[in-house]
Amino acid sequence: MPIPLRADFDAQMVRSSARRSKDGPQARRLLALAAVYEGATRTEAAKIGGVTLQIVRDWVMKFNAQGPEGLIDRKPPGQPSRLNDTHRAALGPRSSRAARSRRFMGSCAGGSSIFANGFSSSFASSSPSRR
Image (cartoon, rainbow, N blue to C red; front, side, top):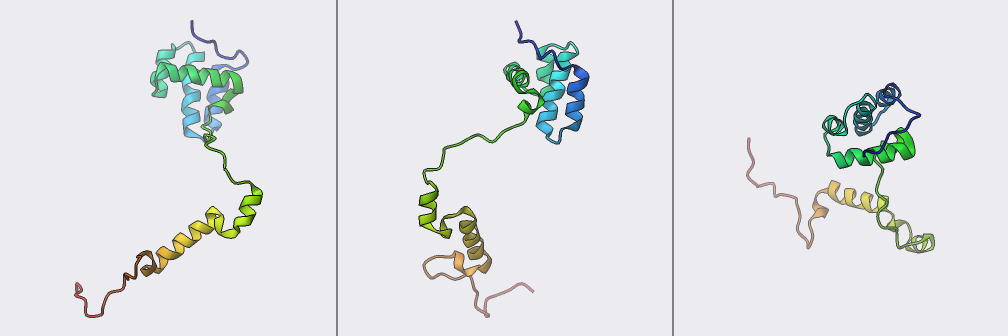
């Protein structure tokens, strides 16, 4: 027995949410659920959404719990940082991602500094060239 969709929405409301959405994947999910509201089977909704039947079930669960906002992709939480604010302060400004990124970009922009162990990217003026 399929899980029923929320009763406080209908196909027209879900389609209008899909039209207003700036997130393409969310709009695709909403359109698949709108088809279910209009009487399509979950299998047909899976074809509309380009996914499997299990994914449509997951969308229904998220939609029922959180509404259209539940169908937006969220960043996975990932592993929490092992450093607290005290540790970061002790490391100083060189520990930030932005500082590391600036250092890397600066080393690449100069050209010769990306080579290690004394190698250089400069070429002798007598090097053959295409003309």
